[in-house]
Amino acid sequence: MAHEIEHTTNHPSFKQYVLIAIILFAITIVEFLLIWDRAVIVDYLGPSKIPLLVGLSAVKFAIVIMYYMHLKFDHRLFGTVFIAGLVLAFLVGIALIGLFVGFGGGQRTYAKDRAIPYTEHEEHEAAKTATPATSKTETPAATGPLAISIGAVGETLTFDTDSITADSGSEVTITFNNPSANNQHNLVIVQEGTKDAVAADGTASGPANNWVQPGDARVIANTILLDPGASGEVTFTAPASGTYQFVCTFPGHNFTMFGNFIVN
Image (cartoon, rainbow, N blue to C red; front, side, top):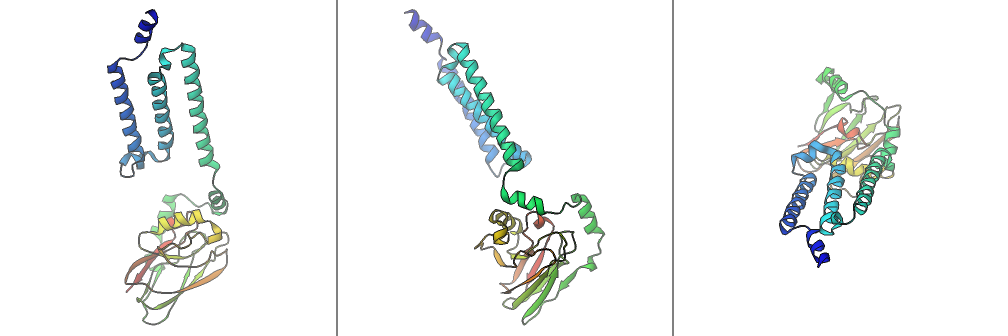
């Protein structure tokens, strides 16, 4: 009888079970919002959402173990050992995530070792603003075979033209010159609005694929990856009328090194 009374009093009541279930449900909703790409909080938190998700999962796990598996009502030593182990596991997990973000990824290390440190974004934008618009040329359209020459501008991670133009169906040959003393570059013609996504997938494909994902349907044409001082060319048929983009997909270059390819 005494054991039955102790067993009854050392367990949550029905209301407590309901309250715990509501708490677990609320935590699950928060976790969903942290990974839902349409939630504003995803962009606001950035990478910090990962340790938050780990922490919320640990809290849910602890609640289930403590109440539904009755660890809370066992000897305090058991609960202390469990909580200590859970906290240690959480800290180790966060440390491993930090190490992975800071040091992991062969392509990221490759790009970091070869990228030329340049001034802060504000200075770069100021330099672009200070450059007269007439300093860059716009290649006119041509009705027949079209030969276009494009170059990189020193170490500034920009092209020497903002726009090139061709007629739909015409044969286009682009010669790309890389006068940089330090940077590798390529030139990739892509569908409008896809340059950053193409560059991201290219980063995952690595330098062996010229930083371009093989078989990418968004890519119309591309040169090979050019070493400093090298030149290369690519010939293709201009696609249907519209506005496309040309971009360097070497990791990090796509944010400043791009222009419009206008097809009439």
